[in-house]
Image 1 (cartoon, rainbow, N blue to C red):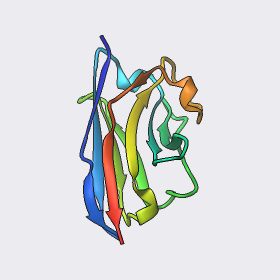
Image 2 (image 1 turned 60 degrees about the vertical axis):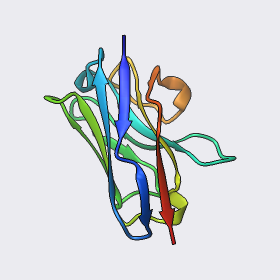
Image 3 (image 1 turned 180 degrees about the horizontal axis):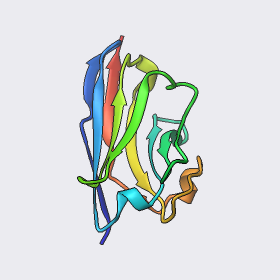
Length: 124
């Protein structure tokens, strides 16, 4: 049974930092595309950052480039999202997601596995 469990959300002031973690079980993070998505009230779920397998690299939404960093610890089977210089518009529920292959797509419909989400709230 695949489980993705997020942690690390919380409330911070603008300019602050948070680090989200997503621990995977029953699933090999290093062998598959994984990503972080977010959904604010009344808005669609959007891809924030994706990480491919191998040397294919990463993808970042324009709104977070230079501020967020996605990474993966293969030994711990855990995905991370380091978020710096947070802005109020980053406020949302953040979800970890995994595909069943190494190539990434930005559409959430292409992801098979999802965590329960962790709330990030940034105040001005």
